[in-house]
Amino acid sequence: MYSEKVMDHFQNPRNAGEMESPDGVGEVGNMKCGDIMKIFIKVEDDLISDIKFLTFGCGAAIASSSVLTEMIKGKTIEEALAVSNKDVADELGGLPAPKMHCSNLAADALHKAIDDYKNKSKST
Amino acid sequence: MTRDIYMDHGATTPLKEEVLQEMLPYLKEIHGNPSSLHRFGREPRKALEKARERVASALGAEPEEIYFTSGGTEANNLAIQGVARALASRGRHIITSAVEHHAALDAVEYLGSNGFEVTFLPVDEYGMVDPEEVSSAINDGTILVTIMTANNEVGTLQPVEEIGRICRAKGVYFHTDAVQAIGHIPFNMEQMPIDMLSLSAHKFYGPKGVGALYVRRKTRVHKLQFGGGQERKLRPGTENVAGIVGLGKAIELVTANVEEKSRNLSRLRDRLVEGLLELPDVRLNGHPTRRLPGNVNVSVFYVEGESLLLSLDMKGIAASSGSACTSGSLEPSHVLMAIGLDHQAAQGSLRFTLGEGNTEEEVDYTTEAMREVVERLRKMSSVYKK
Ligand code: FES
Image (cartoon, rainbow over all chains, first blue to last red):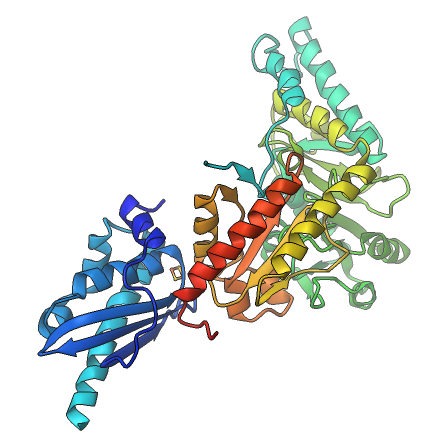
């Protein structure tokens, strides 16, 4: 039921794991099934130089986090903010309808991580 | 090295060769309608009655107490709604448990929103119904108690004989969904206080789309659908002859030496349970001993069930899960909730149902595969704290 690309990202997730002293962290919970996604970013000169994820969730959720990190790495903050939920699902070659909400987590977590980064840089 | 390890016998089982061979003529050469009087009808009629005798003898029942249906779901519906229709003028209270299969639970719920009063009995942490609670739930208006013999998810065996005795003493019909239990537990309806029992062929190496309802003589049940006079008017519709023949053969094979087969399967089950419990942060769901011989249900903490299933599938192992992410409805399994698991434990639930053909080597391979898979998924889990 999943595309090859989803299975590839699920099997060989990119940028999975915790990040040491990130510049921004975003965590979102899935209201529907109770799963949790966390995105860590490092920012240098307005560029997202590194990004990692931790996900407790289904195959689609893990693949979405993984593909998101690939899409975002090296992008400017502004470009990253423009990435939508739909972009993530599209990048995976589509997801089955009941799994669309899992890909929404990824972009939401990223946007939260960017907010967190902005708040931190404001206060310093 | 791709493996083919099937550990989802609770979902369905492969058709046995001997069963297929008996069915084949009824799919082709012997095409008559069993209701026809001419010779084309006589042969399938004979086959039908032979199958009925086989089911009856496997259950220690009489042939005229066996009614063929399209499967377990229909058998449950026929029993529950059929008794409700037959006895509505006498009483309107039905008792069931919180862990029934949806085929029973939803039928009872439907009656509950259509003028019947229903009691859903809770279960303990192992998934067991307390017979005392059945007893005290029965009132003057109670017409039916329906409690499954063995739970399809966590494998817990219910004290059906005790419950049946209570029902009999109080003059209330007792139905049990034995879909998962046939071939694992011996039945003797002559001695067991059970008025109705549902079964389904594809759960015991028979074909899909056929099942049966045992109905003790003189039990009052109304038909649910209208049509011809088949199945002594309780279940109209031209019979699924090949399927019924397959059901008859399959139940004969699966109920031979049940005790010995169950002992062997339990040994395999316990080996898998032991292996899995050696992994950190894994718990067994259901009863440690009073459970189906092939059922293993565990919660793997900090990971989600669907991702476990996909990972196992890539290693050639077929299992299932009660996680919300696998359910389509995005609700975790009602059984896991009823035994008191928290949301996260339900998310990490995994069910292996062993059957004929599984080996010790496969069990050990599965334990090893689980070790790798769980470690890998925990490394990327947002809730895992080493
Ligand atoms: S995370 Fe639950 S369905 Fe995807």
